[in-house]
Image (cartoon, rainbow, N blue to C red; front, side, top):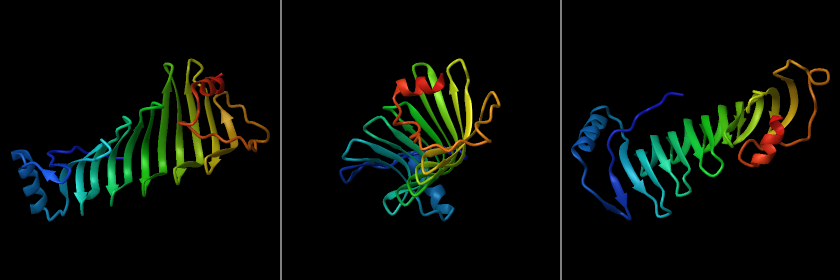
Length: 197
């Protein structure tokens, strides 16, 4: 995913606007000269969140960053008001960061989700579909043991484990499992610590 930088903003609060700064006017001229029909905005939501980035038709479209009242934020590509393309989402309550591909507001494609807890972390890297792990993926724990597990997920459930860092193959290469791994935000710190042992 390619990172972008946002220059200049237009502020909207409760349908009142502030005049553009010199930098914002310069950016608007650049956008107009390139025949780009996007505008730069800082939009404050009644919920207390805000969006800084490009818009089309009054909704986030192009590139921007959305701040939520909870402390969560998303920075990346937008399409008609939804995360779409490449982007990073940070969930403040669980200290979880997802960096990867999005489709229509959901994690979809290649991506990495990392949760930090008690000085340790657990990371899933692999395929996502409709906001759930789906396909090949790897889970890495960093707690001194640096345990690594490769497997296959289907609709968020771990269905096959290929091997761990020791190279030990489970069963005849796979283990069928009904154990659901809602990685990572639904796990408690105690559950994560137990899995890392």
